[in-house]
Image 1: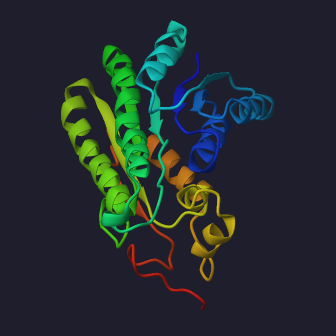
Image 2: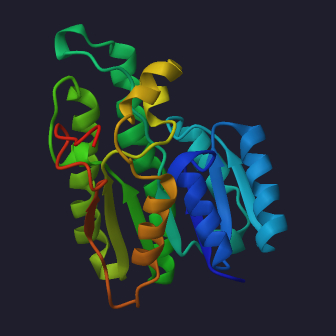
Length: 253
């Protein structure tokens, strides 16, 4: 069987872009996401275009039982995962801490931290049995800095940054590589989700400069995964040329 990559949050943005580049390079894929119809359409597209095998698993990473049931019920051959891309994540709201929506906080914590942990626990044990594998965790520049009104989102991505380091330590004896990818401004559904469907407000986030694309990040992820086994690229921050940090963007030139 060809190599296998499991990608969470594969129905849009960076996850979808990763699905394309890994399929193009001959990987069979386990694609997960909440939107079953979009997941199925992507699987069909990739199968026809690249002639790779696709396993679909429609679930929300926040649901621990759904994660375990969907992944553990895969056939044994599909559990020989070579690459796990923990891409599922989101931001909701942009309020100061005293005005924050607790429901938004819980969604971000449950998705960005707990969901990542649920998936990693299952898949890392598969990798440990084989003494090989590569885990790529999608963080954010917000996991390296903190910006005004980013409070809980930044906290979740700081947690991902810490988990990257912890995974490298814990999985070192099992020869499992771990990479943290921390994008800056990437034009995907991210801002639309943050602003709960307000597309006009979301578009303004990326006006006046050239943001990163999902493919830019997928290309970097592919590069890290395709290095020789003795090479582990542990941590990367990727920003648009116009971005110096979370607060400083050069716009309108």
